[in-house]
Length: 147
Image 1 (spheres, rainbow, N blue to C red):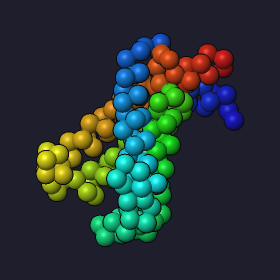
Image 2 (cartoon, helix red, strand yellow):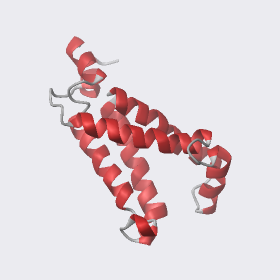
Image 3 (cartoon, rainbow, N blue to C red):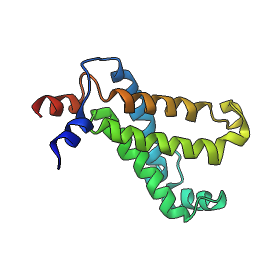
């Protein structure tokens, strides 16, 4: 792989401000992904989530559930580690954008009505992490220093 591309993927700063964003968003994303993939924490697993996704026009539902669940679960774990933070955050931002537009937008802003405020907050965190990278205490920073 081209060394400049690799450097750009792992490049980050020495700021610790992204640490709480990475940890909190990582936990939330991993938990939501595990609901879709493994039916943990009251989730419906791939079959149930896939049927629901088909019902709202995101088909094929099983494949979409697998993609969304994988992005959230594995992306959440990567955020916690601070590994591949920038590309992971871009994927998670796209996932949140789809969730906002296809599921929550029609319900208005507030979560009490299944609105988009929570998805919007996760979208904002994902965009911030895509811009800033993993920051201090991330595996990205360790790798970047070695490059």
